[in-house]
Length: 327
Image (cartoon, rainbow, N blue to C red; front, side, top):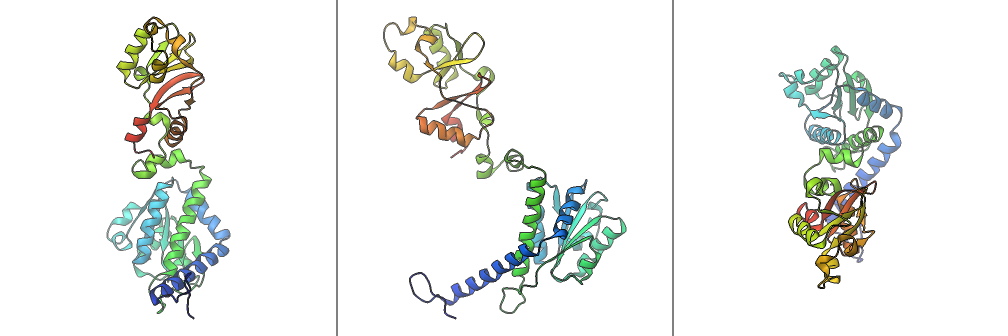
């Protein structure tokens, strides 16, 4: 069958092959989703019920997939690590405890290198979840829970290279991780704890993580003379000063713009309360820093006071966001 591109021309053989692979794997994922049932729930129960860690193991391509599954579980609130089955037979079985749960991956279910891990879990009553394509395999028969992959052929034209099977294993691992994540109500804040670096970590920064609090806040009272207010603004170097009332609540803000608007011979004899802008735009400390940047851009301002219960908790400057890489 000739595959036609959007411009009406015939697709090169490479594109035709790629589309065939993707179509095959897409069909496999759809079949995998349809096949999920009680065993998947039982696997989630076993993993959630483990008081220790989740140990993932597999050989060859299944091992590469297993490493990714372990990493995904660990980063979404389910402590996990990968144990190479061959190394397990030479001492690394000591890394597995009775409190753990084991996920073993093998397309055929007959991988000989997994035999020692399987035997170890049976000896010490450690929960074993097998992911395989064969329900009659040694792995499936030995497992407490067997997750059987649908019988979809490999995308390789020779039917040999692990392609469709590894895609299903990888997706099934993601499904387990997300199901466990949702069971635990794992939040964006929790996620950031495990992802402090890179763009993801920056996206999850909170206002409270970047604001200037405590003595770093430029605060004055309503009756503070502007001469003293200017000194506070200069010393704190944030381009503004928050004005608080007798109860410590934020009543207004004095900015460089306010100084320009009141520039006259009487400026230094005025009070902060007479010069300030009332009811300034503020933000809560628990909001994402990206939200603060949006507000600053929309209002064309450079600073925001961080307020909770009407009282200032800190001040956030656009330069703080830029230095942190928040975009």
